[in-house]
Length: 431
Ligand SMILES: Cc1ncc(COP(=O)(O)O)c(C=O)c1O
Image (cartoon, rainbow, N blue to C red; front, top):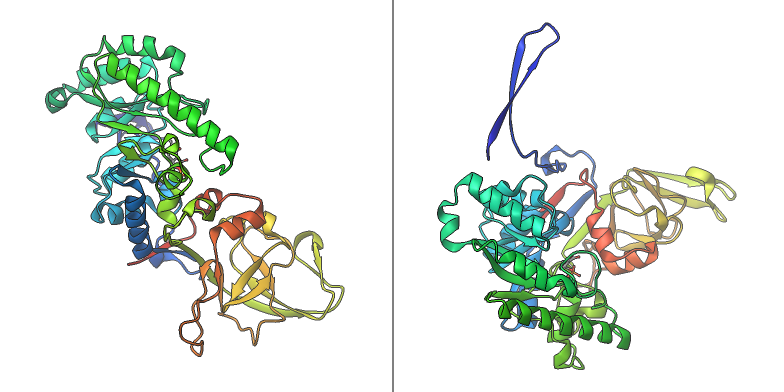
């Protein structure tokens, strides 16, 4: 990475030279496991992750699997997830931001990395320096990339070309070349023979709507995508990769028996995100995907309140019986949505305990009156399986909270829950 020297003066006029990398990469500083005092933590099950990858590979058939690990690997910690998946044979990874891609390269990930967001500002050289594959969809991308390659000296890049994936907007209306603009874009490519269209991609808007309207929308987008790929080929390009499928589209294609061939979105590669982390029941089909995330804490305080007493900000809960209230150090600043206030139950040693009062920034309060013998340090689980008690009968599945269940109660989606677990919650990895 190029180093820039910044010269300034200190308050007494002495010259201060500060060197820093020209790209100020945002490094998410997450609480490290050995720095934390609080018992609140997220545990990532790497075995489940590997199982999910195998299941996804099965659904993908001959298509390559590019795992989508944006937003810090869906909140799991992208470097650890990428390392695990790379060792387990993933074909590539995809992220949204250049910063996310560089974090993975810095962590030693060697798999191909696709940068999907399309915003590279003045950091095109970083793309080249880190051997990243940018997604492009306007002429400015091509000009800047060619300029960066000139500045950097093409060297080895010249031999294999500057590889890019061209994004087509087939109906999401966010990013990508609109089909009507594709001929002009392909003409623009002619001025940059060093830029190679190695992949063509699109993103589906309604793949997880398992109804006729969803099917119609997917079919229309796939038809438009097919046409765009043909146009790219007709212009003399030979993209190795065509990809459109997120998890829902992949699972529709590979698993759902009523999926017709016109809904098969697998092409030569697929881009699943949520399926890698356990998926969503509505699109899981017959795949055995396992939830990879567990969010747990402990009771740190207990009190008994009388009938009529209120709990928490605004006293949104008032006791209608003598109530034992447990205080747990996990709040909305950790990723426990405030909309769960008085709406959901967490697991205290495997027993459901309703949230009473408002979820606050650092704390949540539970009614543990019906939990047998609640104590300080009892385990509280917000996501995932409760640790079985010592005397639990063998073979009985422990009580579990699925991400989907919690998301539904909060009026959110599983993606939202996973990616909102904040950086002050340390991630622990179980192998
Ligand atoms: C372009 C693109 N592809 C693939 C995915 C993966 O989606 P999912 O998590 O639904 O599998 C995403 C995530 O939003 C995305 O933005």
